[in-house]
Image: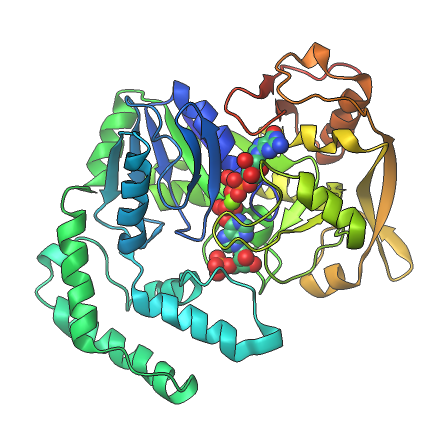
Amino acid sequence: MITAIVGANWGDEGKGKITDTFAAKSDLVIRFQGGSNAGHTILNQHGRFALHQLPSGIFYPKVLNLIANGCALNVDYLIKEIAEVKKQNVDFSLYVSEKVQILLPIHVLLDTYQEEYLKEEKFGSTKSGIGPFFADKYAKAGIQLWQLYEDPQLKQKAVHLLKKINTLFVHLYHKPAYPLEMLLEDLERYKKAMAFYRVNSDALLRDAIKEHKKILLEGQLGALKDSDHGIYPYVTSSSTLAGYASVGAGVPPYLIQNIIAVTKAYSSAVGEGPFVSEIFGEEAEELRKRGGDRGEYGATTGRPRRVGWFDAVATRQGAFLQGATALAVTCLDVLSYLKEIPMCTGYQLDGQVTDEFGVTSALYKAKPVWQVFEGWQSDIKGITDYQKLPPQAKTYLKAIEAFCKVPVRYISTGPRREDLIEVDSLGEI
Ligand code: GDP
Ligand code: IMO
Ligand code: MG
């Protein structure tokens, strides 16, 4: 059986926490897209971690972890991340598909230069090289892991790629050219570093499926930052959807039967782009300070996250795009301080109220229509029994379920692995 854990919003919904919890009952955890732009925070008996490329199944010795074809592999970052995690006494099994593409330092530089060059028109990327990497991948100019070992034309390909990229560095961005020797050194270093982890993931996955292993697919970012369906161009450059998980990992689509879309009980987003339910000033500062496990600050870049109230219009669309069979609502405990909790249940647009999540220009114009819920104003952190939640919290969750039209099956009441409620049903309204 295959389960996908994916984001219903703009990323940072708590996918890492939910994956870490679910990994206990899994055999294989796979990252199928994205790269070191991810920051998945996990708090468990080993400590606190912000995983970037490592799948969130690494905390269970029996679980195999795979970085699959659809990812952007930054070898230097991965090696650093492995060393950091091992320093905290976590030992794990990791495989890297030999067909994964390699993200190079020149991609990171290109991303950085592009953002600098665009000034106020920047996208607010994580400067991890993701955009340029995927551009080269789809232009067939990229390098897959196996090529480091077996491609006799590797050097020639590196020369071509570098010529193209150096043209941009020098003539568009007025930066120094990247030396060929350095790129060749990069590739040599990656070859050595990845030999131990390289795997034929086709065979690995075929066997796992034949043996009815439990597979978990861990998404990066969320539906609203998907390159086809999100708030283009303020999106990432790979598909963040469970539908793509089949492609990025290499498993039959019809086997992905559980799709858990993770959403926060409020909203947060990093980078540029429209955000209808965003809040500002003191109200935002308070939520930012109380949010997540240490406030709402980017796990990868440290940037303060933009925050807002729960956007039911966006989340319904995000859950739909994901094909969600269940919702996991995280950070419910964060809202405990509020007397009243606003929820955005419609968009005021051109004199009308709509519940359509439209194109980016419409989202910029849309004003939130608020429905206000009574707060519970009591500490619910760490509650694991649904019946122990205050009635106001249950009402709030039922409203999320009713708007999104997907059953809320998991409720996270704190950042730690064990702070989780699982329910078959929220009960009657
Ligand atoms: P991801 O990228 O989707 O894995 O999410 P991030 O880890 O980037 O951001 C989620 C933040 O919320 C992190 O700081 C988590 O530790 C935190 N978090 C997750 N679930 C809960 C929860 O139920 N309550 C609280 N207070 N924090 C949570
Ligand atoms: P996780 O997996 C939040 C944002 C960037 C930018 C846009 C594109 O932790 O949810 P990119 O570097 O991918 O070209 O940036 O997406 N972004 C994230 N925001 N969480 C992430 O990952 C993100 N990865 C990228 O800020 O707006
Ligand atoms: Mg994150």
